[in-house]
Length: 576
Ligand SMILES: Cc1cc2nc3c(=O)[nH]c(=O)nc-3n(C[C@H](O)[C@H](O)[C@H](O)COP(=O)(O)OP(=O)(O)OC[C@H]3O[C@@H](n4cnc5c(N)ncnc54)[C@H](O)[C@@H]3O)c2cc1C
Image 1 (cartoon, rainbow, N blue to C red):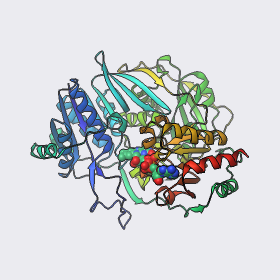
Image 2 (cartoon, helix red, strand yellow; image 1 turned 180 degrees about the horizontal axis):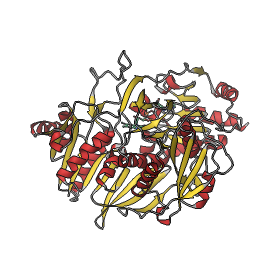
Image 3 (cartoon, helix red, strand yellow; image 1 turned 135 degrees about the vertical axis):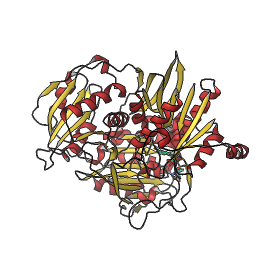
Image 4 (cartoon, rainbow, N blue to C red; image 1 turned 30 degrees about the horizontal axis):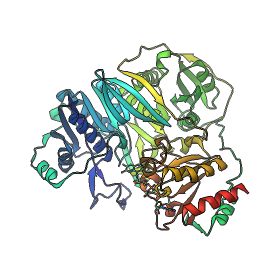
């Protein structure tokens, strides 16, 4: 069996970005470059599959100028057998990349295409599902484990609050989470040997494709607005006094926006996510975002009738389209994306929108490719019907993009848009029952039971990092505080990888994105990838022994000191 692994050359995420003076982008001069860490994880997984006898050949492919040969040589050193560079001087949108990879897959006939779930620079997370749609193959997005069973590829994938296992018929596309495989350490002789290996160069024309016209225009790239300098507090008592004034102990619910009117014109189709027999809280936010773009919002609900009834009462929704099919009970992108695309065509909508949750992120790009539309991921601001702001480089920069396509497709960050309230129920229409695609089969879902608020909609998040030292300390110090404040528990990737807590608690570029009223950052340094998931929190409290830790520059209150001493003091004060 053959695997094609796509590898992208990206700026090293550990080096601060330099912005071009004219605001047109990131200054690449002198920027150290590396293989996209998610692609590296995909490649390592392929090499392990080859070592275990499941694969016979690995072809690494990169798209870009000849500097990408360096990335391909790294891939050869890691264990790829062949390397192909598709020449392009253009900055390509994910849909164009997916079309090039599709053409290459049709030439090379791989059984498996592996690539990172996102690139660490543009953070779109679109190419894999788009490629799967174009090829008509099943997809395993955000994979953290792979196994072969009965001629099928079993993919364990990261979903909100847990994991899901799918069996995919081959050929298939898999996008890798960092957890899929930790890349091996490369030795100098491997790197030197790889330098001597050839890299095949292909042009778009060789693959039967022409120049790609950009569908979207990058208008501006800027740094996120700075926060006010932090207030340094001397002890737990002073911290609690400040936080009381901020409303920490008030039981104020999050504001709900009743959207009875909108000045926007147009028709939007919103995909409704659900869990446990209820609509996902993000749906209200997605409808709120859709109302910024359309006066008619149609909600597509695939699931039990009770969900459609709930959907019909969300303020601002004009109609509900309902598909009530037992075989769609599990949300397979292979089944849902064609449904969404067909509904978008039938209704002639100008916007298709979903919340940027793992569900929306796996499904929406697949639908976008079926509709031949470029899409926008993680929109955080709608400036005008054709102007959007989205974070790039793990939130270290904000990109303003003009999208004038007749059909705009976007995922929106729930926390960035106010949720809608309730209204009198509108009409529900049933859609015809499509047959399942049958190329992917749901096997199981494991979502640990929660006895605390969910991260996504918690008012307070208590997050711990490597500084907690051990799983036992994490439990002993973080849990009582979370219990006392009725808070959700978050963690850094380092804390999760060290086994302090499950990965369903991870916050950041590769975890949950949260924006609670209060975020306690305890014993965590505030790496860019962590800030990406929490920088929009209203009040950030850092408890850290190192006043130079980056989190102290992003916090509103900093208490410098040993968390082992501070947390029991804080808890004792709260218990009084
Ligand atoms: C592509 C990519 C994606 C990533 N995605 C994520 C992501 O989604 N989320 C994420 O969190 N990370 C992510 N990371 C990892 C990230 O770069 C950092 O390595 C990680 O966030 C560091 O975790 P930490 O802050 O817990 O650990 P450290 O950086 O080791 O920080 C520990 C902190 O604890 C403090 N400390 C130690 N002991 C004490 C004490 N007794 N009292 C008080 N303070 C103490 C230290 O001063 C230090 O600031 C990603 C990395 C990559 C390359």
